[in-house]
Every structure is written in structure tokens, then in C-alpha cells.
Image (cartoon, helix red, strand yellow):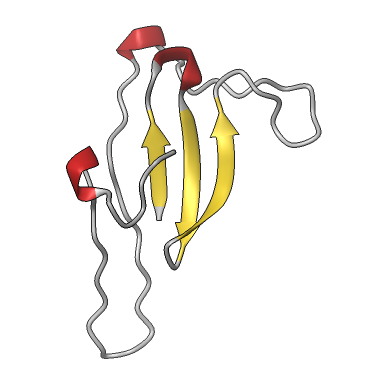
Length: 81
């Protein structure tokens, strides 16, 4: 899963796999990987808008599904720290 913690200058993106946090992937104003390029998660300042999306590729006839969690109250299994 993917979670975006939007808190002004503390905005960050984290990923989970099977309920375990894999860590912070992107953090506003932090260096991207080992470069000197700064990550800008707020290109429009406080007016920056994020839109949830998903991309799935099914390789079988079995049902594939995903779950969106929009509410902090629903994030008991994979909470943002």
C-alpha cells in the first residue's frame, strides 16, 4: 500500500507490503536518493492537491481487488506514523 501524510512541510509518502511499513520513500525538501535534487511534494504550496489512483494488471481470471483507505479512523491495520 501507499500512504501520503500531508502536514505542510512534513509531507511524506510511505509504502507498505503485507501490512509492514517499508519506510518513507519521498519526503518534502529531502534529497532524492544520493543526489542533491530536493523532493518537492508541494509544488503549489499549501494549495497542492493529491488525487488517489490505482493501476492493476491482472494475469488470471481470478478476481483482483484493492482497498482504498481515506479516513484515519480506518487505518488501524496500516497507520501512518
